[in-house]
Length: 375
Image (cartoon, rainbow, N blue to C red):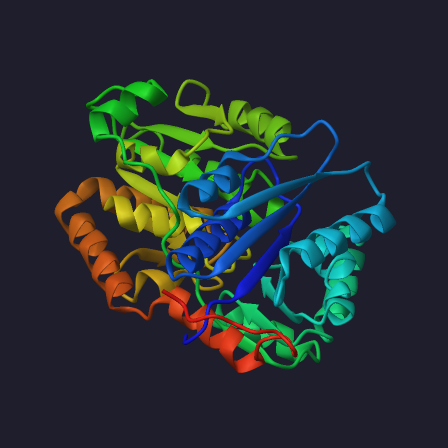
């Protein structure tokens, strides 16, 4: 990229989650390349900036919280527009259905190019399906739409959305990882226990119910302990299900854990049980930690870890997931080789910040702006 750009990312971040870590990592990567980058974080009046977003400030990214009353969409659009004008945004880059629908249409009025990254669709009930329909309508008017997996790109094109490119998520910003001993101590897990890890939002698309069913397949042997890091609408139901499955004492619901990526070395195996996915940032964190992975074959998971970088099973196949976890336990040397393969596959892939710069370059800077050479 020959010129420094002004890129304003807009999102309505949750307290934790993959989207937030992707936005922070992408923003930090662009700032390191010499671009001016801001994150406009749309928050409820009493909310704080999530830790994942706040970390981007250490990498030269401007963070602007916009605390607004719930459902005050007119005020939200006005606040984003005023901030974008003051910042001189050449690119308005939205993330998530809310910013796509509410903030995205501002780009034309601002003389900015309109870019969206689609991180995935959750499906579910009628309300979610209406939101996704509105989002897809909004995406049709973007100058560029980035899908985080080829599967998601096909879904978007099938919905009549053009100008779609695939850019898989890259390495997140990260703090220094804790050692296995330190991470286990923080999670309250004995050093000699076979430790199964699950990290994510406790919602249907992530398949935490399938994960519990898979753990039930492991009883009575081998002995294990499982840690579930994250929170979400299914937590209470999942805790009740764990009790019905006889998993109390073996499964620990840790709740949301700040900077969970530091703790991946605590796990003997990391499990992704998703029904739907884009390219989950937790998978990239597991690969970076050298943790063996068992995952469902959905979204961009296999693309990210490579054909030999994990044990793959079909979504909602609890028996298959349990068998794969058991295989990691019985052959740790093979599991370690797969973890090395996943890291080599990741390291050989294209640079995702370069890919985003190419997206911006293809769209073109906003008319009438004088860009300066990037450092």
